[in-house]
Image (tube, rainbow, N blue to C red):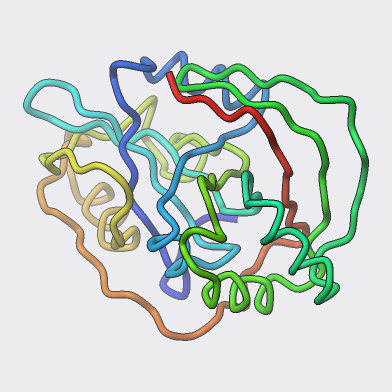
Length: 217
């Protein structure tokens, strides 16, 4: 599935100090994507939202793929306990700590849970304090732009300026601009407004990962 007019989309930059695009894609294909997000931004997101991936390259920005938010990683033990009490997550496994090493940091997975109701769990998270949410990450499976936009090989060049974190992104407008561009280089910032409603295009399977010893590089 790819973003459409009914989807809420975000733009997120991958730091050149941690990855090249090829290194990021290789890691994503091996162990999935996991990106740190502030509690304040997480509260504006929904499971099933799309995150478009970009990287700064000199005066230009390369947009090279996206993922669909289906995994939440790193909620505090207090937050996980509350979600258990509300029957919003079900334990899938108890793990001997499995260390995950990424270009931007390391952590150990100590438990995984299936998410029983994507809408209600996000409503519950939105009511939590930032302290209760903690140092959280979002993730999903990587999709290359070349898989969904005809004629794109590895990336599309844009003039979008670098920005840390996440901002809402008009993927449909971006895609239309790519289709009308002769050289696959597009201009425009592709800002989008926040959508108020929940979405029917939610992931079939959502997952929550419990971790410890989270350290950024």
